[in-house]
Image (cartoon, rainbow, N blue to C red; front, side, top):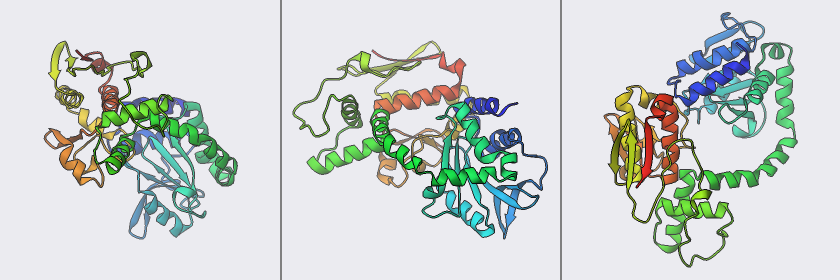
Length: 367
């Protein structure tokens, strides 16, 4: 199986939430990728699992020559790689290993621990399999992780050249406008929270997240200059301007009334949040593994949409945990502090995890 074919399969399985543990990431993503990159994965003097280092262990050491690590790889569960770079750097520093890789299967971060700067500043490249084109992902993995290139030194040379390449700084500067535009378009819940809190600081009243979402929507399309004074509510954008999705679309009218159809039966709901939580309960009733697979998907930048520990829903925000979390099933908690746009994204993500069969059985409408 070619590397590109493996990446395509992994991307589909990631969307389905198939990798629910570190072991499944190692066996289902990493080791097959190393095999396609030429590594003798069954030779444990070359690809060493649980490499021992003074009572501590690195998930994998890639060695050349045998038993001499050239690369350390730390594997995490999908969406849970944040903060693991410090431990990996300590291991790499101790033995002078020049390259360190941190991956949760979806995101791959390539580091040069011996360079200067903070951990993020020593990252040569960050690859997100679901965000990058398959051919580009394959080229990057070949560039830094091909067995032949590691053995002849080309991989390390390429990593160091990329690290020092001043073109990266120019690319970053050129990407700022696009990044800002994307933030406005995607409306991450953290951005909505920051906007709501700042409005409250300035005027004493905290807007609902949907009002924040509408404001950012208008700014993104140039309908609302960021420095304009607010004199009256702006009209909602025409339906034709709303983003389209293949399945399920939550819309609002003057009198908000929500309903959805699941397997031919119509369910009434009092809010978009109720639609979301009820759908998750129905998905779980149909498929006992749905919650585990959904929880294994990468969620927001910091938050988890669904977790066994309710405090993972809003890290560092106990006030939001108390006010905006609901136990959708015994031992499973879900956050509800989201705009309708975010709720739509969460439902779409759930439909990806549920699979094509379930996707065709769900319709969401507002009467």
